[in-house]
Image 1 (cartoon, rainbow, N blue to C red):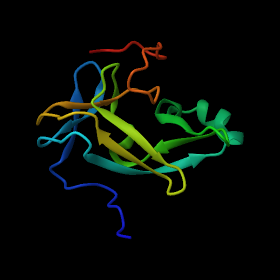
Image 2 (image 1 turned 90 degrees about the vertical axis):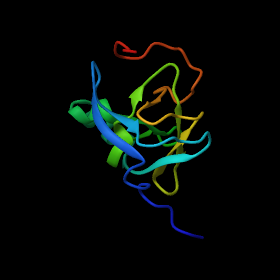
Image 3 (image 1 turned 135 degrees about the vertical axis):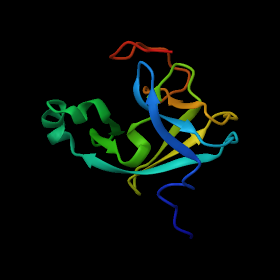
Length: 135
């Protein structure tokens, strides 16, 4: 089996300032529906250490990793820079055993368009998030 690259071609994605949101990720070229647009390794945080992490800035970048163990994780590379949207164009697919996340285009994405995720993990979820969502 071929190894999965940790990041795709350099021109595929760009980390840029996004007004009102801080940093974000934009497409460097047209992305196809179903395409893996990025892959990021994660640092897994055991459930017993979660409270310690919640007291740091890393809490803003951590997410539920494994429901079975209660662990959380922080995605490395661009993985923690995708902004939240209730109309996301990217989904995160966890690869628990490999400690990786693959980011997959939910539709065709135009060059320059911001790549966004629904932080709840379900593209259709409209539950409130812990911060004010900016368009």
